[in-house]
Amino acid sequence: MGYGYNMGYMMMVMLPGMVLSGLASWMVKNTFKKYENRGTSSNMTGAEAAQLMLQRQGVTDCRIEPVSGRLSDHYDPRDKTLRLSEPVYNARSISAIGVACHEAGHALQHAQGYKFLQMRSKLVPVTNISSKMSMPVLMVGMLLMSFAPVLGMPVIIAGCVLFGAAVVFSVVTLPVEWDASARAKTAMMNAGIVNAEEAQGASRVLNAAFLTYLAAAITSIMTLLYYLHRAGLLRALLGGRR
Image (cartoon, rainbow, N blue to C red; front, side):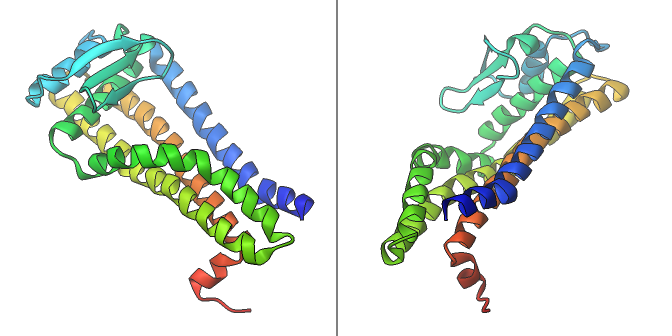
């Protein structure tokens, strides 16, 4: 049981998930680096570009501040703060402007009541708890299934429900990130932050970043399907019979 479980998990989930995540991460770093040393005609910093983008949309209550790290940029809806990493906040590159305007896109989503962002924000506390509990519960359930299936089945179901919250979060994240990039691409051009050629580079940076979220969502779905399959629940859910 243990050996088959480990090999099955490795071949069906871990290996494809690692390949997807690794490829997405490589593309983000490679694309960001490619445009990190290319300036724009506006000569704006990432912070200036984000500020202009927000001002043109009437958002004046969002703070923009630097944060340590690389590619650690994020928008915090709890205190309406846009935090830009060091290679983005003061940099005047296409990469910096693309990332900064993407994060400003999240601030616009918040200001305009974008439904998927609201949904994701509500899922955060639930996901924080369920993501920590799901794997231990699933492991206990799989162990019980080897000698006491009657006890193991409800434990695995509980683990799948807990992990399902993380899956929902990763799926809801996809339209949130895609929409933020779409807003950034439009706003950058409309505000004169980048010209047409520079916008293509910024779009490549944002598209590469989106792949990391897509890879995470696919991996989480594959993991959930694997545990449902191992428990014999997937066939039951699909209504299939041998």
